[in-house]
Image (spheres, one colour):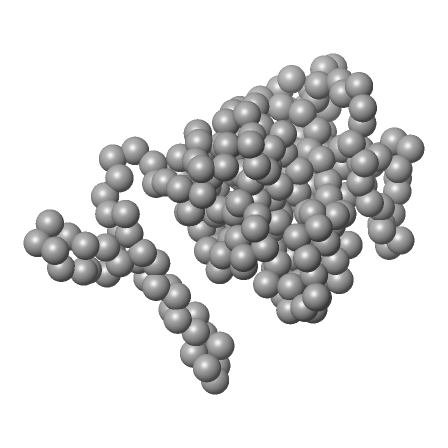
Length: 263
């Protein structure tokens, strides 16, 4: 339907990425095709021709292409801001493995995709990038460069995390707890979210939520917390939460998070 040109400066490493398509006159132009609804997934024919395979989702086309060379069915929507603009319905009811980049944007990308795929009743896991010793912003390409003899089986055995759906599971998913993670009251806070730990099995609870400051009025009353979190579009929000919202069942607090787009 259209291509995406990806160039990289040989000296500075600067990337130049542009879409290109053929217009009605048969001339190639630097733009995407117009899609009245949402854009298709990358490498969609591979997905449709392998209906029973696990689908690997990466952040960016280069990563998807590298995994495809190992015989894996890989796709992407692009970057963090592309999730809500993409048609994820071809992945309904499939097994999904997300490989996010090793940075905050990668975590938000994985969380945003999970929100889309949970609705489609997918079985979702994502690679625990914190356990891979990747550099900041490192991705699957970096890992493959560090493991030139890796096989498809090696990739499939990488440590992974299972997001919590809030539904009881008869067989809890296994995961990896690295040596530098701090356990407190059975919860673990990581860039990829907040996890509940029980008997060294971690389940994803929600996106990362950071308390950045204590706040109050000039009379030292009406205390609250200044919270930071990202919404499903990857945009940072700051919000002052009054402590009184924690009373009772907390429904009022959850309602405010829904309005602000917290996951």
